[in-house]
Length: 241
Image 1 (cartoon, rainbow, N blue to C red):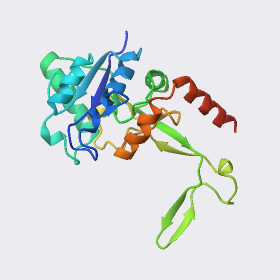
Image 2: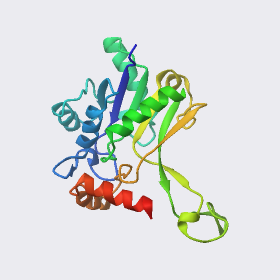
Image 3: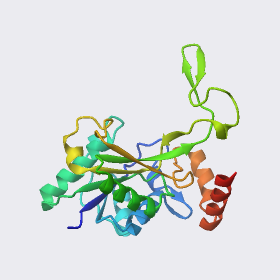
Image 4: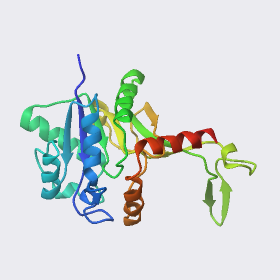
């Protein structure tokens, strides 16, 4: 029996560092639309819901072909709420209105516009084959990292300073795609626990790029104009260096 995979795109209104960031124009269209398109191109996702408190975001989402069956309460749009709170609200409302239920939830953060449908599908497949409670996106980092210990600093991923490529690889949680087993999600008491068995999927650096500030918008406006094939060739060359 085919699994029911619900995609939730959390897109609140004007509470971010950049006002109305989720619908600010990037490359001629609202930022949110890039994530909507990736979800629509996924072969695994059964249904797409945008969770928002904002009527303008709702209108853009609906005109882009996805559902906004209800608005998110204002108390779930501040800096104290968690993604789990948003997910549980959507699941609860859908069950109350339609008796709808799902097997997996895919959370897609709209400030990662270059996310790939292939990554979404791979993460769902890896979730199923690995029997994970959740699966998170990671991005490889090949830099020299340090940590602060009081008034001193110490290396994190190397013992002898050399080329950065010789340092132990570290991974940043980045990419804007999260997959959760619904039963685990409903019963866990802390979003940070993510489950007893947590999987991961490596996202390429470009696909994982995330917008937080107006400076990011400035850079991404130029990136968005580059042909995808050119970016892939650049990334391929870097891997060979």
